[in-house]
Length: 101
Image (cartoon, rainbow, N blue to C red; front, side, top):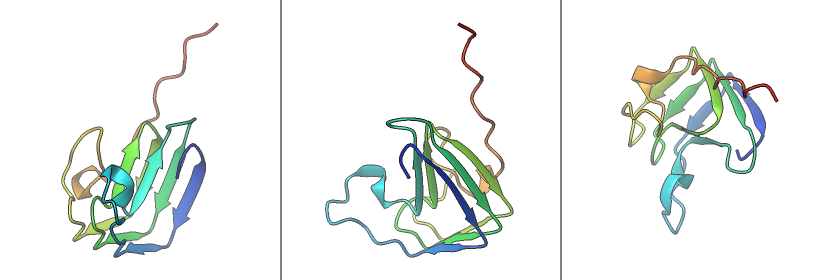
């Protein structure tokens, strides 16, 4: 998802296939990116399994992940600022508000 809001609840995100170009983060099971504007992801009561790269990748977005299982994703390891993994599958705090005008 790019610059949008999404809620994924009681779902299985599994076995995503690599893109033919295999170019970067576009192979994650779920990608939340604020490239062109703010994004917000809510992932609850789900399973993220056997994806070709990270189970969930967050770039500048706000993500809340609750009661979600990560298993056998190719790159499930904690990498702050890059991906969410089993060790980091807790709500991610939102960024601080902008300063007043």
